[in-house]
Amino acid sequence: MWLMTLADLALLLVGFLVLVQATGAERRPALLNGLRAQFGSSDHVDQALRAPPPPPPAMPVAAASLSFAQGSARPVEPDPLFGPWAREALADPRVRLSIVGSTDGSAADVDPVTHSAVVLAADRARAAAALIGPAATDRLILSTAGKSGPRVAMVTLVFAGEPSRRPSR
Image 1: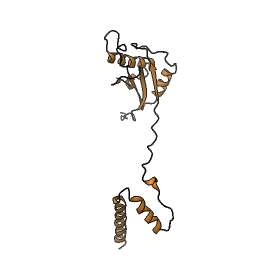
Image 2 (image 1 turned 180 degrees about the vertical axis):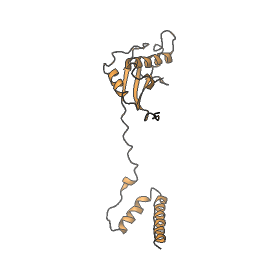
Image 3 (image 1 turned 60 degrees about the vertical axis):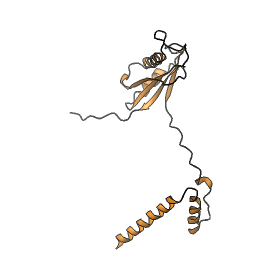
Image 4 (image 1 turned 30 degrees about the horizontal axis):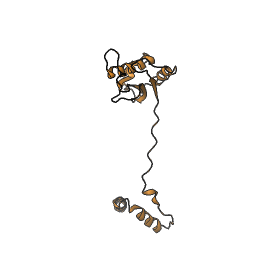
């Protein structure tokens, strides 16, 4: 007998939740105010229910960049802490570093030999990787920016997940 009562209660709860969800967002405060009044509360749901919640704050990402002169793949006054920062980040086996080289899109910001902006952007990414050193070359992701932007190589910390665990033999 008690199982039928429990099933009836569950169906009533599901029906109530469907009723609340079925009422449009514009009528939901009135429904909630009516429910509050029936349970003896004098508080009213204000317009805060109608406004969408604020977006969550952006996740902080560790990043660093190297600046370059126009047409050059040699960093301009690189930060002496850049290499140690990157090697310290790579000490965690779950982390990779994404290095994106970019050019400013001007006719002068191209590789001097090939006259290609893409080759210069790739050279800038490789220059940043060279400053990091051979610590974990298999965990560096080098790429070039799709659009022109500042003359930088942007290094971003990327979470790659847990390393795969192989059973020991």
